Length: 414
Image (cartoon, rainbow, N blue to C red; front, side):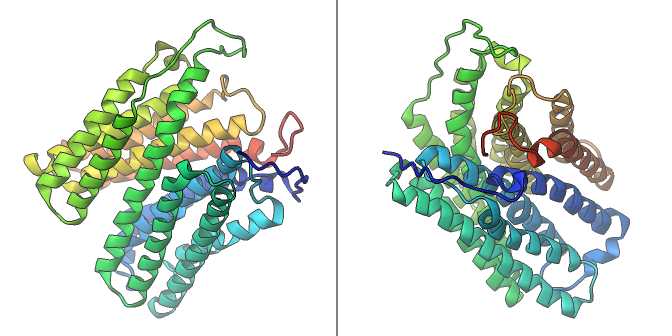
C-alpha cells in the first residue's frame, strides 16, 4: 500500500524541485573541481602531499570521491526514487536545500584545508567531517521515514546500507580527531564497498527493467514490436550478495584466498545474469549500453581482484577498476538517464554528446586501471586519466546543466 499525500509542493527555484537536480549538477561540478585539486597536489605541486592536517592526501582524495562525490549522487537518486517506491513525497525547496547545505559546506572546507596552515586545517577538517555526518544523517532519516511509513520491507537492505554508511562517516570523523590512520582506512574502504553494494542492488533492480522497456520503444517513442522479459533468479541475487560479502571480508581481513574466492564467484554470478539480460537493441541506445557496460566493468574488476593474489598484482589496480566502473561509469550513465526522464524529456534520444561522454569515461577507466599493468610511466597515466575524467564531467555539465536548472518541459512539478 502506497501513501499518497496530495498537498502541492513548492520550490523557490527548479534546481530545488527534486533531489536529483541539485545533487547531480553539484556532484558533476564537484567531480571536476576535486579532480583538479588532486591533480594539483599529486602532479603539479607534490609538496602538498607532505601536508599534515589529520589525514593523508591519499585519504583526502579517497574521502572526497566516496563521501563527497558518490554519496551526493546516491542522495540525489534516492531523494528522487524513494517517492516512486513508497508514494511518500521527498523534500523539495528549502527543506531540500537544508539537506544539501551541509554537503556543500563540507566540500568547500575540504578544499580549503589544502591551502591553509596545518594547525588551522586540522580544525577545518573536523568541521567539514561533522558537516558530512549531518548531511548523511538527514538523507538517511528522510529515506528511512518514507520506508517506515509504508512498511516497505523490500527496502530494508537499502536502509541498512545507508545506516552503515553513516557509521563510516562517524568512524572517519572519530579516527581523524585522534589521528588514527587505521580507523580512517577501515571507514573509507568499508564505505567504498557499501557504495558498491548499493550500486549492485540498484543496478540489479533498474537495469533489466530499463532494457525491457527501452528496446520496446524507438527513438520516436513509437513501439518497435519487441516483447522482452529478462530472467533473474532470486538465488542469483542471494549468491551475488553472499559472494560480495565474502570478498569484502577477505579484503578487510587481508585473507587472500577468501578475497579471491568471493571476487571470483561474484564475477561469475553477475556475468551470468548480464548474459541473460543482453539484447541487441541496447547498442543503438547510449543510455542502455552505458549502464550495461558499466555493469560488465564491475565484473571485470572482480575478475582482476580474484586473480590479484595469484598473479601478485597490485591490489590498488583492482580496487580502482571497481571504483571507476561501479561509481564513475555507473553514476554518469544513471545521472544522464534520470536527468532526462525526470525533466520530461525523451530518454530514447539523449543529447549527442552523451556517447562522447561515456567513451571518455571508459577511456579514463582503461588508462587508470589497465595501462599501468603494461606501461611504466605511472604518473603520466594518472594525469591522462584525470584529464579524461574532468572532460567527461564538463560535458555532463554542458549537456545537462541547463535542463537541471529549468522547469520540466511538460510543466509538471519535479
